[in-house]
Figure 1 (tube, one colour):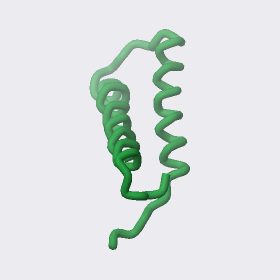
Figure 2 (figure 1 turned 180 degrees about the horizontal axis):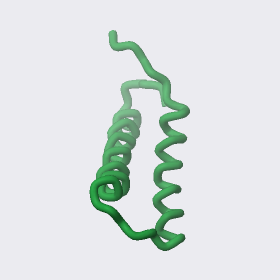
Figure 3 (figure 1 turned 45 degrees about the vertical axis):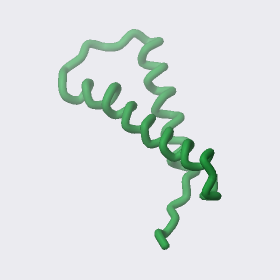
Figure 4 (figure 1 turned 90 degrees about the horizontal axis):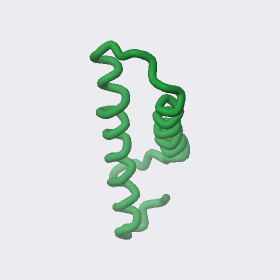
Amino acid sequence: MPDDGSLTYRSVQEGAAAFAEGCYRAIRNPTSHIPQSELPEHEALEQLAAFSVLARWVDVAAVEKAP
């Protein structure tokens, strides 16, 4: 959403950042640091869905120059 200075904008930005950090810390990092056995299909699909949401948010985001 465009930066309209609202609390909603701030909440969306902070929530997206926290979600991204959580995805990387809880899903990606453990798998890349410690060898893991194959996940059950439903868990793998849940993790894929989480990263899919994050990727969609990044895809539609616009980079704004700082004033």
